[in-house]
Length: 174
Image (tube, rainbow, N blue to C red):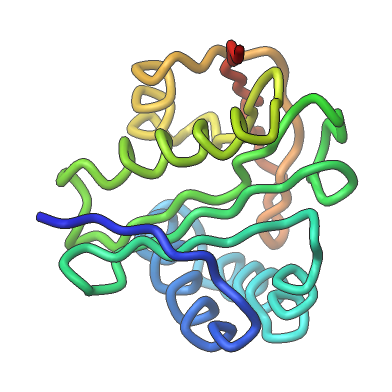
């Protein structure tokens, strides 16, 4: 199985939008109401919002291909593009999503490694992310990859205010 990461650009907008909606729905659809999912997907993954994010120099999207098939994506934020901490010595891993059919094949580990490599190249001291407190699978994955909880924040999903744990992994660079 060959895995490859490719940086996204504005020409990828429609594919990114479709992939975002699909992977987010596969991951969280069964755990949230249909109305809350619709509100969130319409608000966060609409063309205008994604276009603005793609054009922001402090946000970077990367498509994951497995054997030339689009399998998932990664979104990293620096500086003021970060959703919370806004620490210039950190990079935020805002999104890491893999299509259901590719889960369990090492994609998540590959994406984490690439995110860490990119953070190290930028000489960041740590990488951080928010993960829903009820997403046991993701929490276990991040802990296995050296992340630890150092805070929490609210995450609004329609009319449901949820809690995200804020996790961090400290980086060592030469």
